[in-house]
Image (tube, rainbow, N blue to C red):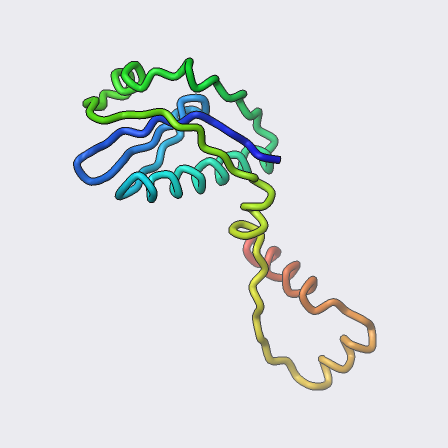
Length: 139
């Protein structure tokens, strides 16, 4: 499912700042418009993914016509130069599969006898390693 939120883009000396007023003033930036949009998509995906994972309430998006970059710049104390509002969209589930939940292949070495015993018991090596790593990280 695609999520779409309005974002304010503010031109600055070294690129663009991007602010999502509906999402607790979530902000990012980029060196040019294209990079700023890429960063806005990544920022939006990360925010929505983490909010959903943590069970936080996700605010509804405002209509683009209801967003005033000048008013937002004033609230944030930003000198207004070139500004525009753009809708930023992302399919959070697809983005997460590619960037947040991507599996990484690891090679490890164990004694042959341990490998044979684990195979005999049909142990899932990946699952055991993940469980052990999570236990170690959380302790």
